[in-house]
Length: 173
Image (cartoon, rainbow, N blue to C red; front, side):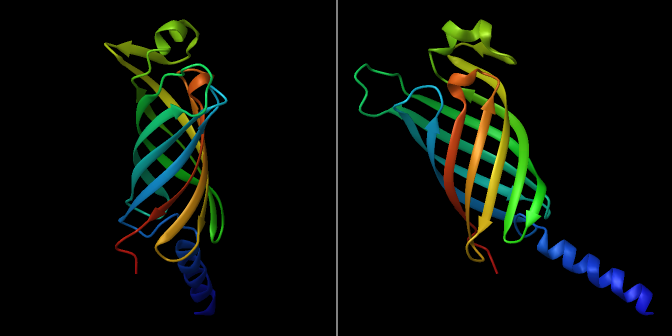
């Protein structure tokens, strides 16, 4: 009996301490963004995350990037992204996740650099590509998580971003 009880208890604890979020959690978050494209380009964003289980998180996000204090006018643009993240490492309450997904924006600068982009194309005024996400997520309290995230985009280095933000689960127990 002891031989059977120990693995069951170990699996129970492993399932509960290795989660990004609770199963079926829906989190809402805000982010501050720094673009690698231009020195003065920053942004703000909002996101929604859904975790159907403890290991997978689906994300939808909207970001607005703009320049501040620039001598020359740098065009701002809107960005939409959809993706999925999975756990790489977990040291509770900190979790390292990685994922990939779709990214699209309405930047007119992309038209000039489209030939240098890796996996990207343009339809009308909208640019489409892929992105890889690497995120460090830390649980501050039951409903609040803070995170730092690096997004590498196939649209070109000009669109790569670093984000710092928080997410909140209104239904947390």
